[in-house]
Image 1 (cartoon, rainbow, N blue to C red):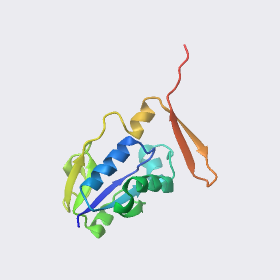
Image 2: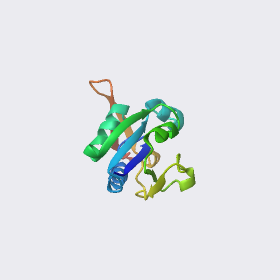
Image 3: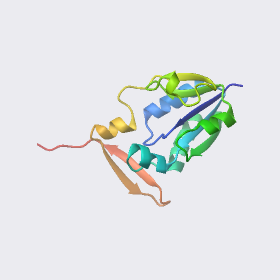
Image 4: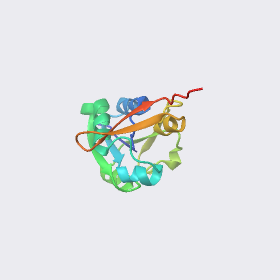
Length: 152
């Protein structure tokens, strides 16, 4: 059985995330996912999370389902300790990184997955798409993207 590992924020879940996860599943039998916590997004991305951690995990599970080995909420900046414990056969990452930049590249095969151009949460925010955060009944956050409408 081939075990895979991927780590990321998966915030503002979109088609690029879905594509990446499906590609991971095509190349392993069991996929372990490390999801960065909300504080990581605040610290590194310099913004509030769009989706709460549990909503992000739920979105990922909808894509990978039974192929899930498990989920980890990453509270550190690096997943290296998890990689050493799981000992995946393959570590997946987007092709915006080089193999040498991927955490754990010396411990497992690395597969860089081609990203869909123009589709990322950061790019969506930079393009002026408005993000509206609405409180949900569970205290989590729901988000939808709208194109800014400019009046002339």
